[in-house]
Amino acid sequence: MKRSIIPALLLAVASGLFSAPPAPFSPEECTGRRARLMAAAGEGLIILFGETDAPPGARFRQDNDFFYLTGCDDRGAVLVMLAARGEAHLFLPEQGPREIMVDGANLLRQQEAASRWQLTRVAGLSALDEFLARQMRMARPVVHARLSMGDTLDSDRGEAQLYAARRRRSHFNDHPGPDRARAAKLRSLFPQAELRDIAPLIDRLRLIKSPAEIESLRRNGRLSAEAMRQAMLRTRPGEREWALEGAAVGWVLGHGARGLAFQPIVASGPNACTWHYDRNDRLMAAGELVLMDFGADLDHLCMDISRTWPVSGTFSPEQREIYRAVLEVQKATIAACRPGRNAAEIRRIAAADLAARQVDARGLRCDIHHFVGLATHDGAPLDAPLLEGMVLAVEPGIYYPEQGIGVRIEDTILITADGCEVLSAAVPKEIGEIEELFKNRN
Ligand SMILES: [Mn+2]
Image (cartoon, rainbow, N blue to C red; front, side, top):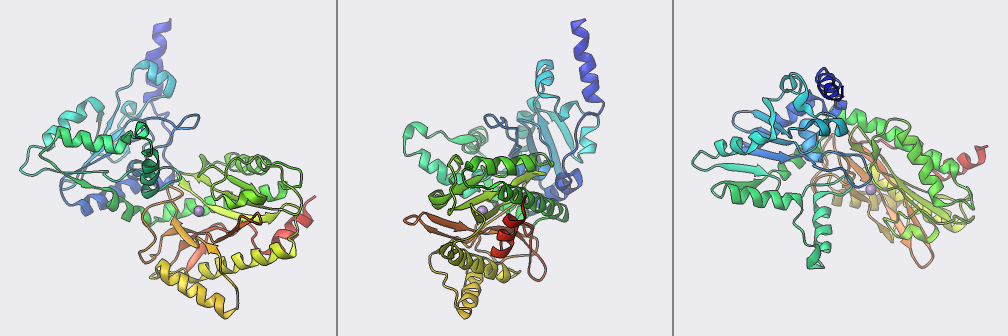
């Protein structure tokens, strides 16, 4: 009896129980991206490795670059593209019956997987080495691999490198990490090949969002904004910060988010001066402000919103003054964001606008800060001119640790043909709107 279960299970998984990727990562979208990447690379092969393990205690999340180009959520997969021939080969681990019982089957078990996913071939991982070796039989083989580090759910490549440098303060913690280890492996297996970094070419693609990505980001903007509004409604003196986290997290998970874009920050009183405070266990008191930084991961795309509001629902005169200065800077910065302008120009234009209106913006930190996409901190540094289809976070903040006051107001915006669209606009940020929300709750 026992033996017959496994073939029946294999039959079931082979007959189409596979879930489709979200619209921004459909086979059509990914095929277009692969074609553009291969055209940009021009020659040689491109090799990208999928994530192998789920983070401790969390759901598996595919490597961002790999997911961007495949839409495939399977563990331990490898994508090899042959740039000149326009071919894309996906290699997947050959799973045993027990693995399938526990984790579910990967694409290797799906009928007609290659044509469904618009790939040249779907093959077992044991064929990868020989396939690579065959591609090396030329005069000067070129291998594009990820020589820069991979980004994560919340950190970009530069930050990943920074954290690695911090780890190396103790040489006992200096482990190479998957990207460095794979690059070293490729170098030792194929010493004749010229290795080139594929990351900058992928970043250039990821910076400009497709209509399908924009649609998901818009939905995420509305969803995460409503979650933040739910957290505002939950705020009361004598509550712990975690009550607000619970309200927001419950909302997004209950409405289709895969998870969170980063650990939520709910920082009341002096905690607001620690930018990435995430203990969220302090008792909130009347008269204090609470700063919340939150976003969902919906369809593998992130959102990043911050708001600051009074625990009691009414700003004190001093809080009102500080809050208004941050809000004016935030709105002036958003108004200055449009195609063709770079970060320095946007800062200059916003500063001139504020000076003309006699707003004192001294002490403000981090106005336009980072791109947003598959990672919360997405892609390249913000020095290039903005282009239509880019998505970024505008997050000025003012922090007075001595007085225990921190205010940050952050929206995620989409650069449009002639300006920008605020994706997270649905969460109140005007002083009147916030106080009204508290007055009208039951
Ligand atoms: Mn941010």
